[in-house]
Amino acid sequence: MPTPTMCSALHLRNTDEVTQLVPRGRAVLFERAKVSILYLYYMAVRFVRAKLEPRSRSMNQRLNALGKTYHIRMWQSAAASVGAVCRTEPGGVVEIENGSRSIRVRDNVTSLNEPAAVKRASDKAGMQALLAKSGVPVPRGIVLTVNEFDRALLMLQTARGALVVKPAESTGGGVGVSTNVTSLPRLRTTMAWARTFSRYIWLEEQVEGDCYRVLVMDGEVIDTVLRRPPRVVGDGVSTIRRLIHRENEARLKAAAVQPQVPIRFDLDLRTTLANQGLTLRSRPAEGEVIQLKRVINDNSALDNVPANGRLCRAILDAACRAAAIVGAKLAGVDVICTDPTAPLEVSGGAIIEVNATPGFYCHIGEKGASTFPAVERVLSKALHQAPAQA
Image (cartoon, rainbow, N blue to C red; front, side):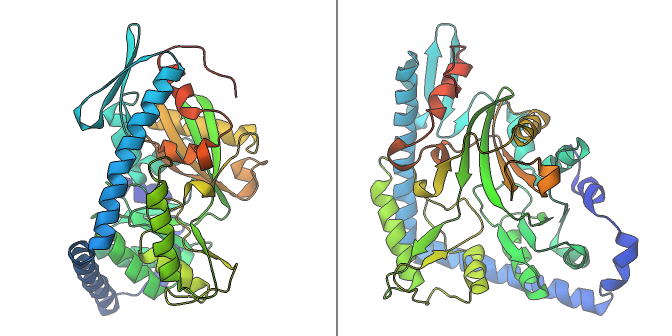
């Protein structure tokens, strides 16, 4: 597994040509100090919010509990559909058997993937380096610490567009991720925010286009979904903050039959709104659709649209190859591109994530709408039954 230093060397380019652009001496030390102060501030903010926002804490706890119940029922229903025996154990673990073959699951975690593959996929820098070395299109990126702010600034100055800043390890679900980083002040704040979740920070060039989730198992595409960003619709009266609270309450009510996550009040929310000239206090006109984030993970079931047949064979093959390189038997591969009918190398698209514990919720739309039952197909393949055809 490449180390952070190795990963940086793999991706950073033309350093000698632009080194003179990076401030030196006291200026660099001053910038590092600013990031460190912001890091302490965001740590305090996270601590205070966790203690003083019982409404959000209660909602998260209830959604987590409902989510566990939903996943148990999901696996039980899928097992019944493929004629397998299902046994639920304490802690939400479900064991599914068919003759001599079995699979253990808990929420989105399955025994199909080895722990080493799960760990490899969670190491964003190492994963991207592996994919890049094998010729899979990925965003240019580097991994660093807040003490290497000069390298971060160099990345900002040489990038072909905006940057994405995220924790380099030990997180998932879009936690700590910020997009549309195009300025020095935003680079400071987003690095400090990411630092509250991980010592190492991953910076990558932002890829433009739509986000697709490709569910892959044993080198075969199980399902594809277009994942749209989270949004709210204005009513001409309510602030965006109130609209978000209302949306979160609606998700809580629907969580028993539809897996849901709350819209988090984080840095990506505020910066995405700021790019539209909005704040949480803004009052959108009636019917006006407001995109809340570029990070997809906080979207709702209604924002996930079946996309089988949209992606060309070259993109699907790239997704399968990425899962194999990471060593994941089952993976959710996230692809961003502007043209799903063209190879990623042609459209400028890229694979941005390989998730070894893929969330099945994005394959289940409103009232279970999907091209076909992805969970049942996973079980069919895992238990060596004849899978349904896409």
